[in-house]
Amino acid sequence: MNLPGKLIYGWKAIVVVIMATLAPVAPAMAQGETVCVQCHSTQSGRALKPVKPWQGSIHAENGISCHNCHGGDPKDAANAMNPERGFLGAPRETGIPAFCGRCHIGIKGDFITSAHGRALGQGGPTCVTCHGSHEIRKATLDLINEKSCTQCHSYDRARTIRQAMEQTENTLSSLAGRLESFKGQGVDTLPLEKRLFSQRNRYRSLFHEVDTVKVKDESAKIALELTALKTVLDKIDSEHRQRRIIGVFAVAATLLAALLLLLLRRTYSR
Ligand code: HEC
Ligand code: HEC
Ligand code: HEC
Ligand code: HEC
Ligand code: HEC
Picture 1 (cartoon, rainbow, N blue to C red):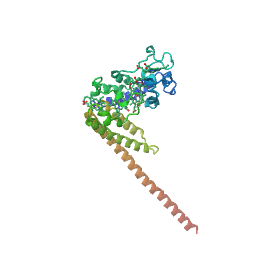
Picture 2 (cartoon, rainbow, N blue to C red):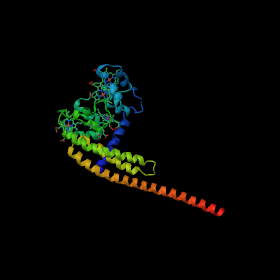
Picture 3 (cartoon, rainbow, N blue to C red):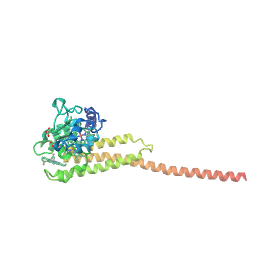
Picture 4 (cartoon, rainbow, N blue to C red):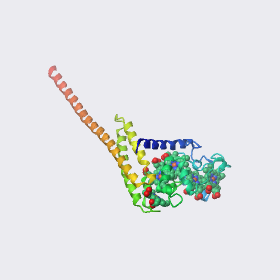
C-alpha cells in the first residue's frame, strides 16, 4: 500500500476514537447508569435479551452503551426512546453497515465496495452476521471459520484469506514480543514500534474487502517489510551479545589487574 493509504488507515483509527469521545455520554460513566440499561434490565423477552451479552462486550468495555448505537436520551426514562431525542430504534438488515459505520468508517467503506457489500439485502452478510450485535468481542482470525463462512458459499476462498493473514499475524506478534524485551535495555524502540504499528494497521485493514488476490499481494508486501524489521532486531541482538562478551572480558581483565596489583604490593612490602 502506498503512503496515502497508510495515512488513511491511521486516520480511520483516530476517527473511531474521536467518535467514541464525542458519544453523548462520556465513556467514564459507569455501566448501569443510563436509564436504558436500568429499564431494559427489568424487562423480559426481546427487550431484556441484549443486556447481558452487551455487558460482556468490547463495546461496554470501551464505554459504548445502548444509546451510543441506538440513539435516544439516556437520562430521561420517560422520553428515552423518543425519536425527537434521536432514538433510531433497531436497524433493518440493509441499514446495519451504516449503523455500525458511523464509528467504524473505514471498515464500512471497505465492506460496502466488497462482494459482500454488493450482496447486501440479497443474501450477503452484514456486520452482525460475523460479529453479532450485542455480544461483540475483540475481532480475531477465529471469526474466519468453516461454520460461519460456509453458510452461503464454499470455504476455499475464506481459507486462502485466513492462511495468508495467519502467517502475517504470527510474524507480527513474534516481532512485537522481541521489541518488548528490548525495552529497558537502552534501545530506542519508538521508531521500530512505529514501523511495526504501521504494518499492523495495514494488516488489520485487509479483511473486509474479502479480495483474495489483494490479501495475498498485500500479505507478501507486508512480509517483506517485516523481514527488514527483523533484520534490524537481529542486528541489535548480536550487538548486545557482543557487548555482553566484551563486558565479561572487561570484568575479568579488571579482576586480573587487581590481583596482580595485590601480588606486587605484597612483594614490595616484604
Ligand atoms: C422505561 C423502560 C425503558 C427505557 C427507559 C428504555 N427502553 Fe428501550 N424498550 C423498552 C421496552 C419495554 C421495549 C420493547 C418494546 C416492544 O417490545 O415493542 C424497548 C425496545 C427497545 C428497542 C427495540 C426497538 C425496535 O425497533 O424494535 C431498542 C433498540 C431500545 N429499546 C433501546 C433503548 C435505548 C437506547 C434506551 C435509552 C436511550 C431505551 N431503550 C430506554 C423499555 C425501555
Ligand atoms: C454496537 C451497537 C449496539 C449496542 C451497543 C447495542 N445495540 Fe441493540 N442492536 C444493535 C443492532 C445492530 C441491532 C439489530 C440487529 C440484531 O437484532 O441483531 C440491535 C437490536 C436491538 C433490539 C431489538 C432486538 C430484537 O430482537 O428485535 C433491542 C431491544 C436492543 N437492540 C436493545 C439494546 C439495549 C437495551 C442495549 C444496551 C444494553 C443495546 N441494544 C446496545 C446494536 C447495538
Ligand atoms: C458509537 C460508536 C460505535 C458504534 C456505533 C459501533 N462501534 Fe464497534 N467499537 C467502537 C469502539 C470505541 C470500539 C473499541 C475501540 C476499538 O477497538 O476500535 C469498538 C470495537 C469494535 C470491535 C472490536 C475491534 C477490535 O479491535 O477487535 C468490533 C468487532 C466492533 N466494534 C464492531 C461493531 C459493529 C459490528 C457495530 C454495529 C453493530 C459497531 N461496532 C458499532 C465504537 C462503535
Ligand atoms: C464476513 C464476515 C465479516 C463481516 C461481514 C464483517 N466483519 Fe468485521 N471482521 C471480520 C474478521 C474476520 C475480522 C478480523 C480480521 C483480523 O483479525 O485482522 C474483522 C475485524 C473487524 C474489526 C477490527 C478491525 C481492526 O482494525 O482492529 C472491526 C472494528 C470490525 N471488523 C467491524 C465490522 C463492521 C463495522 C462491519 C460491517 C460494516 C464488519 N466488521 C463486517 C469479519 C467480518
Ligand atoms: C450470509 C452469507 C455469507 C456469509 C456468512 C459469508 N459470505 Fe462470503 N460471500 C457471500 C456472497 C453473496 C458473495 C458474492 C458471491 C460469491 O462470490 O460467492 C460472497 C463472496 C465472498 C468472497 C469472494 C469475494 C470476491 O471479490 O470475489 C470471499 C473471499 C468471501 N465471500 C469470504 C467470506 C468469508 C471469509 C466469510 C466468513 C468470515 C464469508 N465470506 C461469509 C455471502 C456470504
